[in-house]
Each structure stands twice: as structure tokens, then as C-alpha cells.
Image (cartoon, rainbow, N blue to C red):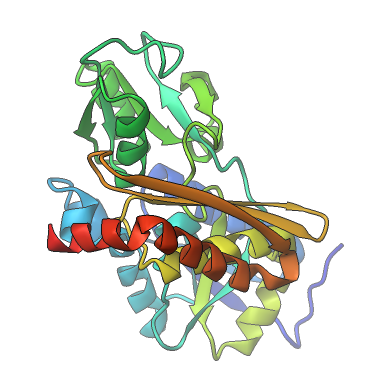
Length: 316
């Protein structure tokens, strides 16, 4: 159904996006959805290279976190060069800058992680000393707890770069988000999809978010049909959990919520990067109380020792 209305729809909308193939797929997906809703709307994409894309020599946890993929897109919005930005929600900091809002959260794709390898069909099949590449402290912590015999090595770059490093023999296996591979039609590279019980996903993984200025009532109204309420409830709980635990890519933290009718189940963990300490728990509650559920699970994890783990990370 077309909801095009010239009285509420701006004539032109500019989407700020990173220039990686995956980021551009995400921006083009939103562009296509908006064009279908508003045929008279001129939707264009402003491609940008962010600091997170330029600085590939260090781990994200050492150079400022995933927010490096977001800040320059926000600057383009603040300066009027763009109206919205499309993000992987897992890259969006838990606290948005003043004046910004998430105007829509799209229906979630596959939230799970995926094992990619040319030799092995499962994590359990990896032999002693096998090299596993990942850019995520969350993944590293969980791997070290369950598979201490593996060698975990840093891996940066876009999806294609990471796959090329694997194919060139730098790693025996790598772990990537399943949704990214699926969106790029690279499902054939997935050797195993990791259930949340085996690898708890990142907060917001698999979901796309559209950011804009919070005073753009015209844009917020335009984005409303793209918003998926069940996904939004899940990621609200996950982000509340992370926010209460001061979560960033400097913290090995996972959070994943599932919705069933009016009920929400939230799982979370905090661990040391070396796997020496690890606490996990889950709670269930009303989906209408998603924020409170996330905060309550954070308090439960703190009572189990998450505070001490987080303090140790700060000391380090």
C-alpha cells in the first residue's frame, strides 16, 4: 500500500552510509523500502568512509569502539548533508548524542554468528592450536571459555577482506555475523550457524536502525512504516542490559532477547577476554517492560560478579 502524501513527505531524502558492500546493501535496502512507500520521494545515498574503516591496524577496542563507524555519519546529518543514516544496530553506541534519535528499527534478520572455514564443519572439529579470527571480544571470551585449545587472533576489515584472509591461509576458521553473509548472498560460505547457546550474539545483532535528528518530525513520520515493534522491544531490552553494564566493544558482553506473544526472554553474559571469568543469566518478563527487564538482568549479572569482571577490564 502506498502511503505517499506530499503534505508530510519531503521532496528529497539523503541517506548517509559507509561505503563497504554490506553497508551499501543496507542503505540500498532502506532506499528501496522508502521508494516503494513514497514514489515521489527522491532518495539518494551519500557514501562515506569512517575512521573505523580507515584504521584497520588496531582492534576496535583499542581505537575507540564501534562508534567510530557512526560518528561521521552523524556529523553529516548534523551539518545537513544527510537526513538519515542506516546502521547495523550492533554498531550503534548505547547512548546517542543529544539531538539524535533512532527513527526506526527494521525487522530483525538472523541474529546468530556463523563459522566460516574451508576445512572444518564445527567449532568442536577444530584441532588443538587452530587459529580462529574474530574482531569481537565477545566472541573471543566465549571461545576461550568453551574451546581453550584454540588460538584466537584479531581480524579486521570488511566481510570480503576477512574472507580473503581466511582463504589465503591466515586462519583455520573465522566467525562472522550470519546476517551479513546472508545479505551479501554469501550463505554458501557458512559451515555452521552458531546457536545462541553456543555463542550468545551481540546486542542488536541482525537488526538495522535508521538514525535521524530528533526534531525532524517529517522524517520520523516518514520512517514510521518501516519500524518493527517486536524487534524494537527485543533490542530495547538488549540495549538496556548493555547500557547498565557500560557495554561497548571494550567489554566482552552479549545480550539476546526473544519475543513470544507478550512475553520477552532475555539472556546475557559478561566475561573476561581471556575466558578466565564468565557470568551468564536470563530473565523473562512482559515485552512492554523491555527496558526494565534489561536493567534487571544487568543487576542480576552484577550480583553474580560482573562488577568485578568489569573493574578488572578498567584496571587493565
